[in-house]
Amino acid sequence: MISVFDLKRQYKVIGKEVEKEVLKVMRNQQYILGPKVEEFERKFAEWNNVKYCVGTSSGSSALICSLRALELPRGSEVLLSSQTYQATPLSVIHNGLKPVFVDSDEYYSISLKDMQKKVTKKTSAVLLVNLYGMPCDILGILNFAQKYNLKVIEDNAQAQGARYCGQKTGTFGDIAATSFYPGKNIGALGDGGAVITKNEKIAEKVRAIRNDGRYDGQKYLHNLIGWNERLDSIHATALIVKLKYLDKWNKRRKEVAEIYCNGLKDVVEVTLPKVRPFSEPVWHQFVILVKNRDVVKEKLFANGVGAGIHYPIPCHLQPCLKEYNEGDCPNAEKYAKEVLSLPMFPEITDREIEKVIQVLKKVVRGI
Image (cartoon, rainbow, N blue to C red):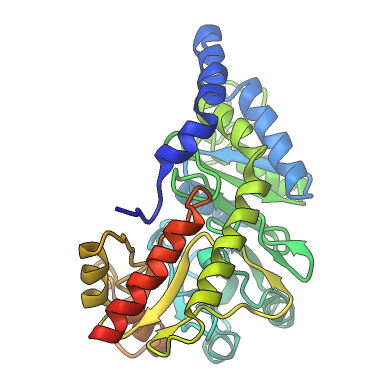
């Protein structure tokens, strides 16, 4: 079976190196924050060409802390895509803000055209998502935000290393959140995340918020209402090791995507992902569109090929959100019925990719 993602293969490459460094943490017993977290924060900031990085306990906590640090007016509206993981709108709700769902464009990204229809006097921010490792229309969104005096938060959880107009995603807005969930392009040994920003005051505020509202050096003095959302030292240690490989892994993902595109370009039953001009994706997922998606997925599995669905229900139609309706984001709703993620990870072999292509051709042409 060819898996959608295979962490065991990654472990074979870097497992001993990670174990060696994690053992050092276990021996010195510095599990919470400390030098390893500080080292990773410094290195990840440098890798992103920004000044500040703050490690958090997950990508969700990075989003929540980012929104809290911007001090958006309570009850104000945040524009965001409905085609994303539910953690994105939940971070808005947890901050006492209202998510306003925007439809997707042809690149699976937040639609600037629909955004212009949904901005109101109550809008305070745009939360853009570089979904599947593909940059959205960042410059268009920045111009839009400037026009309406909006803050810009980047959810860069799936796009570490992607570029738009030569600049890394996650470095355009006021603040950005990323995730180190194990399946991401760079993952921790469990949940983990980070906030990056060029703004020192925002970074300091996030550091306090993620540490129960305490600023550095104030052990029992809590100036802010915060949470315990710290990145653990063991996760930071693994991330330090993995960061050395991330550029290489992203390069391989691009090679895999190119093979898929070349092998499937003439298959009329498959709609390939579109790459936005001036962007360089890092292909966290390789997502195609197919009719009869669920049947295709089952038949792929029966022929030894795994496939995923990211995501089967648009955020605005989730049961936990009652005030939104079907038809609010028609493109996102259509994509939810047709998206299919093919196996994508750096260690997949060319031979396995070719098998995926041939099996997929056989399946879609036989339905």
